[in-house]
Length: 466
Image (tube, rainbow, N blue to C red):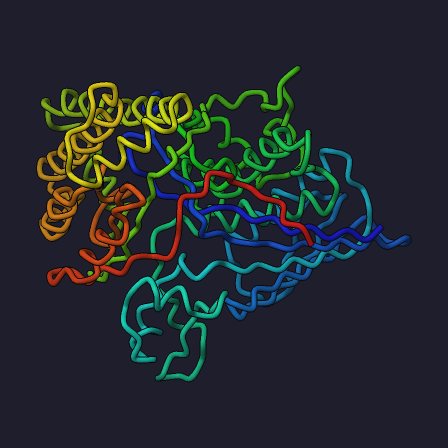
């Protein structure tokens, strides 16, 4: 029977754990976002055939169409002759079809896959400027959805030259996760609805981690894929060897079999040693993300410079210990705030209101004070590490913006997400104060900050109803 499934995966904001998340057993706090990449997959079986699936992939946004054939006999995906490769799409397709085959899929047929990404993954500044619209959240909110992400290159008239700058929300991890989720759902390998959802989530996650590593050409920490699949989480990375053998073998079915082997009596997968615990942003606290126009940052070179400093400076272990401790405290305090908000909702609302009005917090609201302090200390330690390693993790221009932000009533904490640099800032604030912070950011003279029209969304993978 013909089967169509649409699955979306969320973007991410790493609020605690930058650089530290690269090594076990360091913990990171990652917030899922309402910015999502959506993938629709439709499978139509064919009676006769030679044991292969013909695939047509399209993304109107990237003005891209691709054709592939997957051969069951060889367990291999072959792109049409002469088409440019896209490592993320190619790897996601290969990994998903190999896992489907491992899990018993054996039909001939046609698979149509279409991908669309929410506008917030890509900087829309040029578009707003060329339409003479103010660069602010309201303008972004009123743009039509799924705008093209390649601008026409004026010199040659072709559209594939100048790709729009990204906003750092983890579009490649969400792309891979949504493709894997939609393809495995359409082929009947996983069910992301109902009681089987946790099992499906783990299979998609393991498959997407391997595909993402293969596409990047390195085994990263995987926090972005974990958040794409599980949403808002506390995360500790997996040991690199788990993904390495599957990546090295070209993600063939026999290698992928060991990556998605179910654990007995658990939705989890054998052999993966990551730790993923669901977190929630307590009610009444919202996340703001500012897209900053200041030339972006090169994460890989920043990471290698931090690693060089770690290896050479004998003071580094102490700073790292402090930073890891702060990251754990952010997670701990967030959980305690959530508990308090559930145990005593009225009191919790009163605490947030006091915070928004600059009043002193009652003694019983220690966890909120702890969260503020932990986020503040994370910021200070990251800034210090950047200074020692000569890496602009929190550049001075950002420091001025964030110091101003911290002084606004109702701000719980703020910082540079992920590896830091010039491209973004985040803040956790009371809902009452969100507009104040937004206005302060958008009128800030020294950096051009545009608040993205996104919220925290903790759901991870979502199978959308047709």
